[in-house]
Length: 476
Image (cartoon, rainbow, N blue to C red; front, side):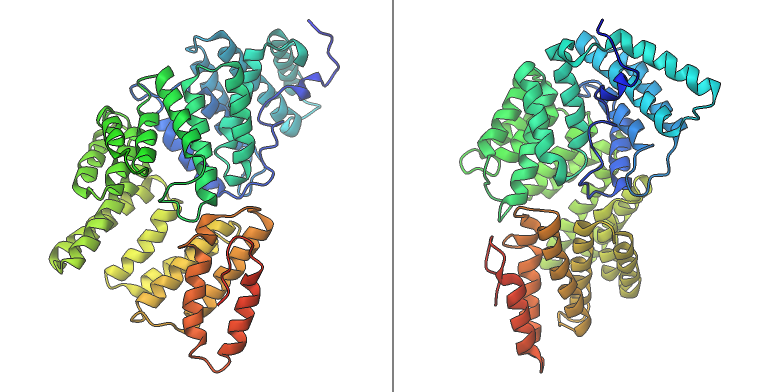
């Protein structure tokens, strides 16, 4: 056993040493709801891997410094205890040791930040935790490569849930872990998802082929090779292959081999059929998820999206009775989603839009204003909310531009440029893509300015703002 200094434990890897809070622009409540939704289904048949990494991260979040957190030591401890209980079922010794190390180190940091130095109980707890940690932690040079790999994967798991600012680091950590242990299906799957998230942000059209597709395919194939029952990875592979000309049948084959007994898989299968515009098949699959013990909020959101698509289809066919029925069903499932996850951003946006379909335009406006206020500290969501509000007002003004809509679109452009300048130091397709916020806002503003007395000056100003974008010339 190596000699330790008094504060040696502060160098032990855990959530408090992984710098998780810097550069994060994700709504904290959304992170919690997403994790809690997964926790509710962590004991489904064939749920991939141990939930320990999720539980340890969830406990850390209860005492983190993210905006909106009210520290709750008791709740954090509940999650850590649950992780300890789950860890007893982990059969791999290095993995089990990793979760023990992180759990103990996390608890020590909580005592460091929130414990009373003069309290005898705090002192006794610290001594007990340090003694237990000494039993499983050696000096960094003596820690086995496999334990280090599991620690890196545990850190990557947390980072991958914290938005685009952490994706590159999470990818690097998964690659380091895989270089040591190449047979971990869940790591390959997670690596593929991280490659996709980064790639689609940088492509001009996320529905078409994009860079790094072959890398992503390789990751999913590895995940399936090391765990043929990893249906979630198989679904992600199918969703990707379906975009590649000539590989549609291969995608269909993978989807056909998956089972409908896990909520995550059901959701992904529903997305697959929806993208194929096979709405009834998508609905049939997704509705199976309603019979599960703990269906996720995302399941209900995806069902609402299918009813939205069916409503559009009925409208085009001038079947307005059927359209009205679909709108009612869409709202019903949006409400079910929001009941489980009140902060589900896209469900709230769609709920605001639905009021307009029901003839309650002013109620929709009120909800949009509330959403915009809620998202002030989250620029990407704020851009989306403002742009959606502008579209809503434009549509319900007989598809005519107004000064109010123009003002909101000007805000969208200002916010988008700020995000590109300060947060996303790369091309973000939702902002700069062919159908991104900048291009759509620019077109509408050009149309509006040409009808205004001072329009020429505003057109020049708009051109100047957008002309410095390297990725594409948006100037009028």
